[in-house]
Amino acid sequence: MTQLDRLHQEFHLLHQKTRQGDLFQSLGDLMADILSRAAPQAATTVALPDDGETVLEKIKAYSDDLEDSVPEENISIELLQQVVAQLANPLPQYRDTGAFFFLSYVIQNDMVSAEQLRWLTKYLISDEQLFAHILEPENDAVYQRAFSMLILSLLLFVQRTKTPFLGVKEVDEVIEQVALYAALERDTRGFIGTNGWAHAFTHISNAIAELFLMPRLMRADKLFLLASILAGYRELKQPLVMGETDRLVEVVIHLANQHQLYADYLLVTLKIWRKDIVTQQPKQTEAHWHQLYNRSRFFNAIILCGKEEVPSEIYRYVDQTKDYLV
Image 1 (tube, rainbow, N blue to C red):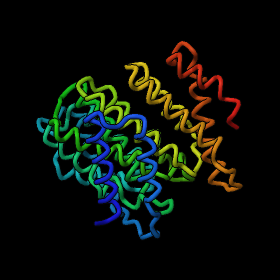
Image 2: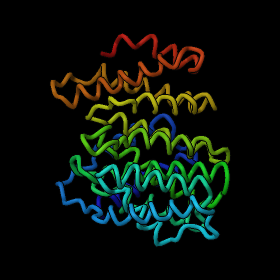
Image 3: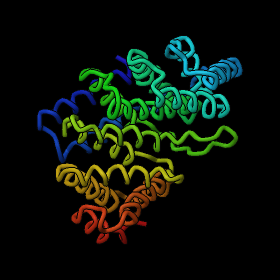
């Protein structure tokens, strides 16, 4: 069994126990224990697409045709496959203004069939796409992972508001893949040199926000997702400094206002983080200070939401304890 297989198995078990009502307060610590045993792996070569210019020409040709008339048929699966592969391209003209803009346009304008939407979702949440090189040091596979989340958020919006193209089992698979990815991602880079945005944690928050908004999703599923993204945030030893924490807090507070269950869990988590700071021996390491400042940014982002927008018990606790953080 590979390490990723083990992580899948352990998170699946936690998901099932959460659904059965067997886990609540201890969920974050159990996730933290699992994540602490996820050993980093040595860097390996990232395979990158090399036909970006060819795909860009095909995108332009298709877009030019759209200016003349609305196509009678949906986008071909062949072109869809070629375009989505460019989400892994480090160069922004192929990944961002190329593949992402094009996919966003055809998805939002109903040019992709329900069958193709299902294919896209399955492709984007596959282990090969979503967990590529994830346990290795920072690498170019982050674009593939992060932009898979960004396109997935668009697909989930379509699922929620237009065409429910995913069945119950398929939504379950999305939940478990997104939850594990949110817990495992460690590449916190936002804008990267001349390659543009990676912004994985903002994209994670966007996808999870869509899942939180699904009215038929079980509360236990939303709780599991909430626990996963908070557990991953707790373990980060790299800084989040380009607005990711603000977006995450916005999503989490919106959920906490939906039901007392989520507010209670968030409060439990904040108290655990506070306990971490008080009880752990200070370590004069860069990783330790990044963890401390990430949590400080989380608390401050809650305060900045405003007293009227945050559940009273959460705002009161954060306001009373903020001075204990850096």
